[in-house]
Image (cartoon, rainbow, N blue to C red):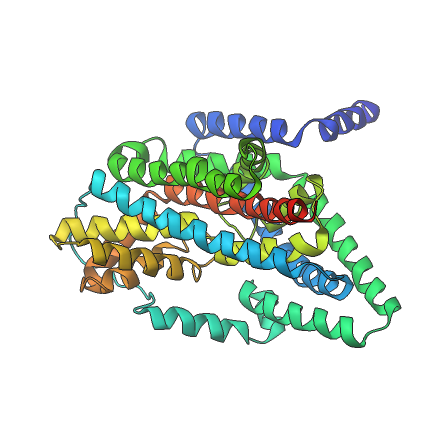
Length: 406
């Protein structure tokens, strides 16, 4: 029996991870529909996402510090390129959301009041970003504050590069390899985690969520798919002058699929780094650009903020001019960069955007409540777009740099 189990485990580990995830997805759906009362199955999803969230901050801190310490020259242009890609694609995503909202306007059923803390002005977003940046590094690690983690890891990496001996730098690099191997072991449990996550979503919400707020879901998902399949590849094509879709579909399959179920850009950082390694990208580059992307590459968040804000505006009868819509695009782009990398992180920025149309917090928070209801779809697609885009634009930036040098 022991030999059979061992043979099965070897065969299982050699099977494509994507295929194993698909098997977990199918089993989770079947179990969620047939035995929704077996709630213990959902623990698999909780454990998997918790493990990723636990190891991701340590991975980012160590890899960023080690990469900067060992980095040679020539990476500066790549970082400038990828940051511009992140920001420009987020801007285009918000613009797409405005166009979609005007072509297919949505009105919500708003009643009652929902009180919850949310940023009330754009200045609060910048204030939070600066405060998070200089948070105690140990607190940043324990609370998964990636702005703080990046800030302190970059400083530590620069200090190591300028003052540490080569032996110390090599030791830090070796420790980063240990953390990376640990992450690989965690990722092997992804099929079981996906099974648990799908089971929980199906058993709790069923398929009703697709019907109750179908128009809003279709508008959000339609804008996100358009951004992913049209605007992102267009940016890549203009830079590389070659077909971007093979790279895009690889990112969607190996990054977006898992991000769809974990619903956390932060939890998907280890998976994205593993994909970058498979694509043969420079570790010194992607170990910084991937966690940076999880912080500022928020196409899906910009779409969510824009669509939900305009839906509220249409509902309460606010006239949205061209200039105010363009201003909303800028607001959504900047605000999305401050969105939390956890499930539902973009929704709490909707009241802030609504405030620029003089829409009260009590009304705006009702839209946030609606967002959480459809979050099983909206947030999943949003995270898949955001996270797969991190790898897609990281690869594009590196290939663009190589193309210029050839």
